[in-house]
Image 1: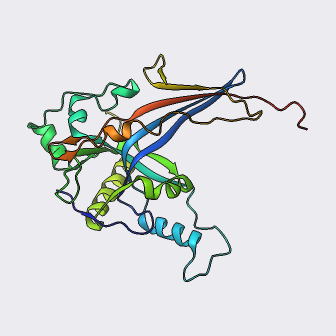
Image 2 (image 1 turned 120 degrees about the vertical axis):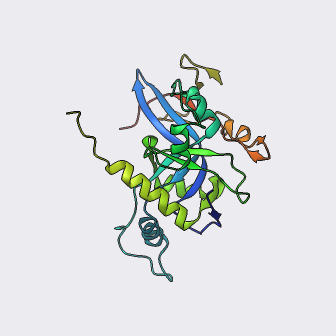
Image 3 (image 1 turned 135 degrees about the vertical axis):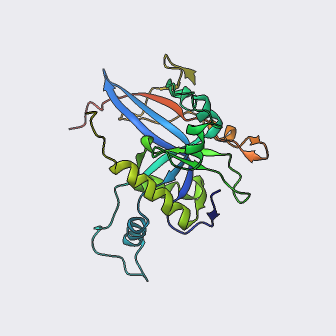
Length: 188
Length: 64
């Protein structure tokens, strides 16, 4: 079970946003511009919270003092998609993108239980309590992407859903950093 | 709005403003309401969607 908490004024690590866009490509050909984007129903913010705090106060200032430089501005904010567990187990969570994912994970057997206990580095299982009306979900760390900071700030009020409590978000952050820093060894 | 060859939504929009323009004319995020359908007392979570926007670039001849 994961605990949630109230929103802060700024974007924080562990915040969940809805309908976040990821630009796949912008192609110009023969005078026609084609923009392809993916809209993710839910994503979780993974950027370090201290960086988000410094970014925020570099933009709005502390006690009315606006910094002279934009040295702490973040260009982008790192997020990871949150998928519906039901779709995930069916291997159909990316079906609308023409991507078929594996569907052989048995939730009641070893691999499924490892995922439930967050022992598989790639995934983070989210079981929300009664304080968040969100179905059981999965974060897939492999699908992380970045969102323009200005864009997310401008959409913050409209797209904010809920925040994950600090201890739980720290666990997610720790697992994500471990996932990114893992070392793939060759077969010998 | 129509399905393109990838099964994704596509919006064909031709600019008449005499400048580079890629304006989104799709309804604002059609999947948003779907993601809020009740599912066993909770809100369900829909799937990511691909949206393609097409715009014609027109150049202003007299601009130097």
